[in-house]
Image (cartoon, rainbow, N blue to C red; front, side, top):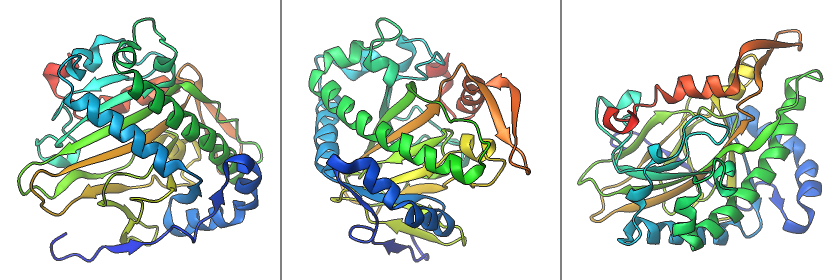
Length: 317
């Protein structure tokens, strides 16, 4: 960024490393270190053995789908399946279909595919059409989704214990969670790929992207860029849903995406948005650590905030 120093945050080799054959054991052995990260950074980080290679295969499969002419991803644009069901807003979102609040009316230079856990099981019927059309993408997406959701269950239980001994179970749902595959494309000299924002979800599992540029504001207000590309480092973001449910005990993990101008630039990002079952009632934990159940559902929470994302009207209608 012009005139601003963004310092890299090297993580590989310095954060907990989870082995695939001892995932839970390694995670809970690292609980104190993860809690310290949350207090210092506002997000958590670990290394998951082999995840970088698995995500690279998924990104390659998504690249193939993006450039395919028969079938075309455009045939599966997101309104072709029901929205705000237990499966959330899944499907393909065409290039420049999202105009964030801070973008002054200018769409982000990206296209993306949302693969929900419900979609992986073809719920509602027909929603998995895009996955049947791109079977390699479906296989790789399922593998990364499973990795991310297993991590989310562990992170969720750690965070629940930090909120209160009486905090409700998060009831994280595969059906309501969404794997987001994003392709940013060259827009001339544009430096901002995604403006400063925080996620809607309860938890976000950020996998290694194909290039640098993902920047986070730390708890002390400074900005840093975690080194994720070509690593096995995975981040856990706090979403606005969890910030609300925790009674403000956690702030949302605020981040943005920048780049240096490069002709023909492309960048691929993969993140799992993890939600409770959309049909369950919202809750928040008060100052005394007691839960207060609200009238709306978690689906209502998501729906209200999705409407504020800035999807272009001709696509949203």
